Image 1: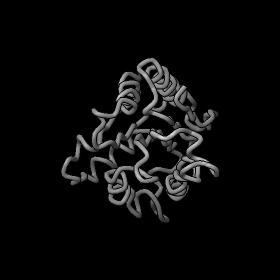
Image 2: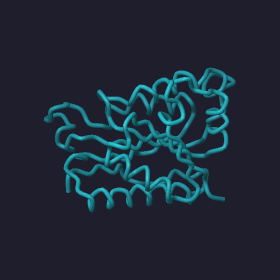
Image 3: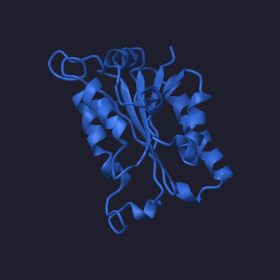
Image 4: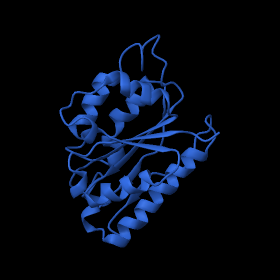
Length: 194
C-alpha cells in the first residue's frame, strides 16, 4: 500500500521564490502527496490544531519544505510545531500519534554548498542547522529521513530548477512507494548552482 505524504510548505513569499515554486509544483504533481501551504492556510497565524493533527494522522510521511531563514525555518513552521506537536499527542508517555511516521526536511538555500561548511561563510553545514528538526523527529518517535537540500538557488536557471524539481518529485515517489516499515535509502540531495 502506498505511503501518504504530507508536504507542509512554509514560505511567506513562495510566489517570488523560483526554487520553492519549482519544488511546490513538483510536489503538487505527485500522486499520493497532499500539499499544504501554511502561510496560505493561516495568514493570521491562527493555526487550527485539531485540523493539523487530523492531517498528520492521515499521512505516513511528513515533509517540512521551506527556505533556510536565519539558519532555521520561517516563523510559521515554528509556530506550527509549538502548537500542533502537543504533549500527549506527538510526544510524552501517551504521545504516540506520530510514532513510526517519516519526517523529511526539504530546504532551499541561496548560498552555495561551499558556503555551508567549516571553511565557508556559515561555518556549519545545512545538516547541522537541521539538527533541531532531527531532534524533534526523535522526540516524536518518527523516522528522520536524510534531507533534500537545494543550494545556490539564486544561480539556477529554468532548466536547473526543472531538473531539481524532477529530482524532488522522484524522491517523493520513492517515499510514497516504499513499504511503510522501510527506511528508504537516499543520499541528502545537496546541489549547487550547476
